Image (cartoon, rainbow, N blue to C red; front, side):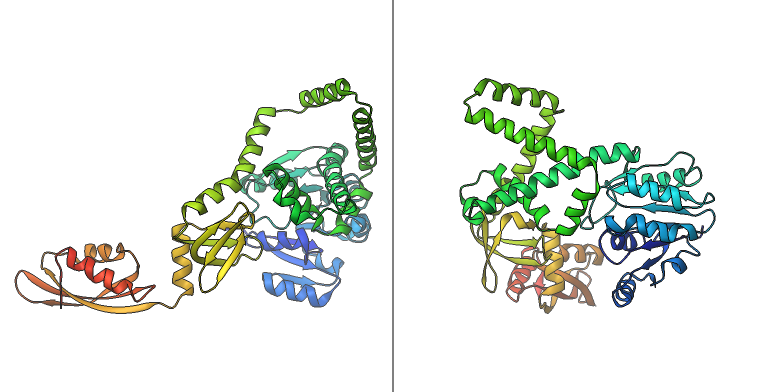
Length: 435
């Protein structure tokens, strides 16, 4: 087996740096760094990786160095660390703005060190690297040995790879990130300035409004310093914001002036410019339909037991569905509980079974049954396991009664004491005689 490469993550205790340390730990020998020694040591223990509070020392044996620090400190940190990188190593950054980081890597990394600026198009909440988009922005003649190795690793990890230049990356990110974030932040600020009760507004909402509000909230609830930094540091964002504001004022004037013709023409031209309109409708219908689908499933489950997983806390609730509204499900367990349908996942029957097995106090019983001697132990166990309510079962004793009859003693567990009656009726129903 080939030895694992050494990877140092500069700023690996939070955000994407920590995510990389956690999810790539099986493939690399990882060292993380942090200015805060206490938190650095704590994260290193949690993730089972090495820690150093000295960036220069941390990269001395590194094959790969990844810079994962706030945008405004990226170029400065690269300037400090890159000149000390070992010969033949690879320097990467995961900054969401590429031009400045790429220039710093190209300027300060020695000629015998390779560089490959990149941008993972996901945040630290994703559970796996699979099916995630990674943008690579190689610099000419600066990744001749490492580019193919990185591309091969990401392809094997089932990532989607986009290769471009730092300049093109920043231009498109001014729309994908900058314009989108700014629009959402502006919309949230406008709702606040209009003194709208958001919870009350959801009572009037269409599925599209609810979905839009969730997307706005997703941005607003996150680190405001990060979003300011993204807006400020990508120079392309300035132009994008200016055009957005100008277009907003123009469209607003068309409405105020009663200029229906130009307003409609503008929308039609914009519609033609957007690609894959049919696919967009299908995707948005699917997203909108997810809430309706969950509501329908829960409505059909009224009076039945379900398991629900809270998407925020990941806590699992198991109980009987008592009532379902357009927004909430009322679950009856030890106490009555109201959960928002949009914030829960419905567990499969298997997942509910495993949760109950691991979290509920189980009932254990012994049962002796006289059955034909021709019965095979293996098939008796399978039969018992398929009885509703039975969790585990084993045959603890076999006693030959006659040539045609054998007494089998089973020990089994169930979730509820009342399941014992059902099990015994089932055994009698297949011709067994309980001793």
